[in-house]
Length: 311
Image (cartoon, rainbow, N blue to C red):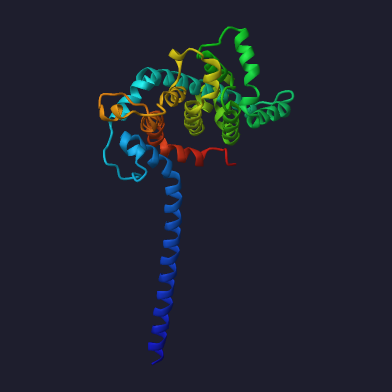
């Protein structure tokens, strides 16, 4: 009898534990699904809207289920963006700038981590201060400087500062590399010095190859920030033929007709610039970034864990 009672109590406690675990899991997954929807909603709205026909746009009852999929919006958006030419310009500026950042910021970060020089703490404090200073506060002096040296209207105004450890978020990249090099064992560099390697050769042969995780972090962050930046290109580049992809989006808003005539709605060959075309253009601008991030996502997360930026 006692064994039977004990068995019932044991089963009861087990059922309570299982029920509690199921309740907690349901709560956690419900919370995660809700948070995921909050982050995914803008993308879902962008994609759904980009496929709407003019009739669906004017029908407030059409939200997620469309009467017609208007794939022609993407063709119209590509023509309006001059997509191939602008994509080449954007890739040229972004990849060159990011390469300059990785090369120069790693070199500067290595100097802060390994060498002692006069006023080192002062210069590093200025570096940290430059991280929190908004770009908007120094854009006017930079504009005047580039005007005086004759670089206005060229991509060099964006690219050259990156090769000197400046540019967009350059100070942050220096800090990331410095944190990694502080954790790098000095024995590797001492062994290279015994073999006769100088400081520069030690950096390029030992330090930089071991900083792949930090370089990948700077690559991902640099590509995203340079791709999405519209302030500097809008200030320095005035020739519309040299515009980058994000700069072309505001032009589409000016192309949206305030009133669409009935003849245009009935004429399938008429080119109509509306919210659907704008969303299609936005999708095309964001798409390379999404593909790039999906390609490096796993390695990026591993690099964040292995880097010294959390130390």
